[in-house]
Amino acid sequence: MMRWTHKPDAVSRMFAMLMFMAIASASRADALPPTSKTQRGPVMAELTIEPTDVQVGAAVELRLRVSAPDGVEVLMPEFGEFLGQYSILDFAPNTTVAADGETTYTQRYELQVLRSGRQRLAPILIEFVDRRNASGDPETVFELLTDAVGFTVRAISAEALDTPLAPPLTALPPRSFPEREPVLTGVIVTLVLLLVAGVLLWAWRRRAAIVAVEAAHDVALARLHNLRAQPRQNHDDVDAFYVELSSLVRDYVEARFGLHAPELTTEEFLIAARDADQLAPLDREFLGDLLTESDQVKFAGFVPEEAKVNNTLDAVAQFLARTGDASQTSDSPSVATRIDAKTNTETAAQHA
Image (tube, rainbow, N blue to C red):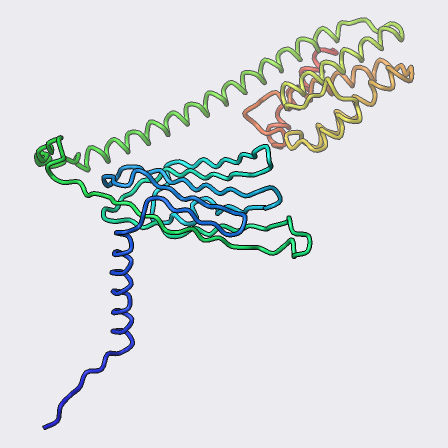
C-alpha cells in the first residue's frame, strides 16, 4: 500500500514565518515601555509617548528629543516618515541652543489612533556628523536608532455609548414626474416666443437705422438748399462755400455709412472710402473728386467758374439721392437710374 507524505512548500513556510513574527511582535509590544533613551557617541535621543492607555479615536502625544554638543550636526527625521499608520493632527518642531553650545532638537506630534489593541511605535533613525575631531573624516555620517515604545488602545464598548441611536427613517414617497406633453408644449412656446422676440428686435433695429439715415438725408438736403443761396462773389465767399460743402458731405457720409469722415484728412478719408463695401465705385469716385476740389480751393487759392460750382452742387444732390434710401443698396442699377433721372429733372427745373 502506497503512503503519501506531505512536505511544506515555500508558501506554507513563509506564512508560518509571518505568523511567528506577528506573535513575537505582539509579545514584545506587551512589554514595551512608553519611554526610551538611546545614546551613541555624543548624541542622546529620548522618545516618549503619553498617555499610555487611551480609547480608540483619542489623541496621543509623541515627543522626540535629541541633544548634541557643539560641533555635532544632527539630521532629524523628515515630517511623519515613521508614522504611516497614524493620523497626524499637529506637528511642532523646535531647536534650542544652550550657553555651552549644546543643541537640543525637539519634534512633537499629536497623533490620532484609529485602531484598538497594543500599539508598537517602531525605532526612529537619526543621523549625525561629528566635526569636532580634526583627525577623522568630518563628512562621516553616523546613525542612531532609538528603541521602540508602546502603548495600549482600548476599544469602545457598547455600554460607553450614552447617545441613543435615532430610529430609522420612514420610506420616502414615490417621486412624481411631470408628463412629457406639457413639458414639450412649454419648450415649443418658449422657442416661438424667442423667435418672435428676435424678429421684433431685428425689425426695430432696422427701422431705427432707416430713420437715422432719413434724418441725415433730410439734414443734408436742407444744408444743400441753403448752400445754393449762399453768395459766391469773391475768393473768401468761394472758400467758405467749399468748406461748408465739404463739411456737409463728410457729416452725411459719417451718419449714412459709419465712416468717421469729419475727423480724417482727405487722403485718410479716400483710403477709408476705398475699403468701405457700402459705397459704390461711382460714389467713391465722386467723393474723391469733390474733396480734392475743396482742398484746391482752400489751400491752393483755386477759384472755379460758376458753371463748375453748379455742376458740383448737382453732383452732391445726385449723390444724396442715390444713397438716401436705406432699404436699398447703393449699387442697384434700377434704383440708381430712377433716382438720377428724378434728380436731373428737379435740377433742370430749378435752373430754368
